[in-house]
Picture 1 (tube, rainbow, N blue to C red):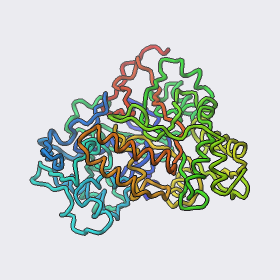
Picture 2: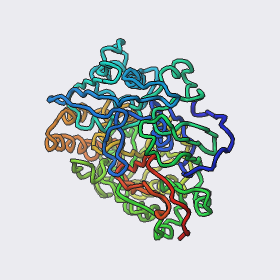
Picture 3: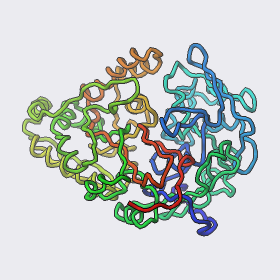
Picture 4: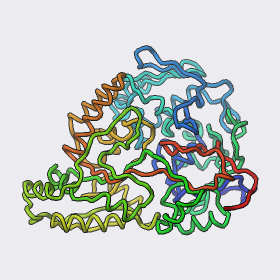
Length: 525
């Protein structure tokens, strides 16, 4: 299994130019299968798509494609690959490689959780579901070695944003077909991005080395980067403080009890970020198949108390799913905090004062990171629901992989969740809860919601589109409440700005590794 991969590298080798604390071990570096931040960041350094994100704005700019045109109706894109594109061993990257990579992500045998990003292609969803077997009917074709034509079901305002995401990266067909699920073990491993995979040691590090055949290799600033796998905040901070690491990604990787002190330092960086912490309800299980019960749970959560008591990192309380500041959108109001209304709704559902309400469980993931924040929130939720509604909840903690598997099987009652935007558009959040989305994980289906999302995503008028998506989100967070938003994340990086260059705050917290470098040693703070 790829998540258990251990690569024999070249020893310690040269001293790295940059050392980054990336979080826990990645599950996989396969762009079609990667879902966690720790996976996606490294995969993005190895494999590139037709477009990539601008390191400053996180907006789409040319990647393997040097240019593209869109048809007047917005349904056809023609991409032109750069001259002399090469895989890292030196053989050509062609339009056929793009087509193969996209069809592989759509192939149901691949089981990509992000396959839905390609459902906007003509027959993309039908191919993924097995209704269509002929890949030639899918809306991605190689017109010649350097030209890719993409046809969409309808105009899609965020399609170029999708082209920057790792699922649509270009991966090496010959190696994958030869080694199949073990293809990441191949040496040399052909990569299309700015770096090569030199070494991967479990519970230690991933070493990345500059790809000399990358089309923009002259602007790859760091030749050797070590991405450390560290899941304990105290260890991460100690390593950083003693000069063993240059950057810490993610606030979960610093001790929460030191947050007030660390936030006063010039190496603490926070900024608006597209990420939401929320709860999922399993709507296939009684009593959570009743919207009144779900609303009662939501209305008794004092979100401000949670944020002020446990976070203290500038996280705003969330009353809706889509974070404020998302492009071309203003989210609706959610349910708010109203314990009296909650008690009335619970009584209407047949549980006055919590009587006869079945004991249920609240599922959350493991204890590592940020002072066991998920556990602390779980205990507080347990207390709020008991005090305000008279209902009893058992706390159920699982290791992250097991927890995610339970969510996917709908083997839970209520569970903690989070989502980080893949691109700057409300669709990256709202599309999750369409009936057919593999990331829904609530069992909730609503025909009106699906219809609004379908109509909104085909709209080229941004104002009309925003109104349709606003109505859809109202159903999600107010009328039906299969999810309960808790707070919006604040972006976070930890690095010395006098030494580390090329990192820019942006809504996606996306920082291409080839754009980052360290200046010669300077005095510490």
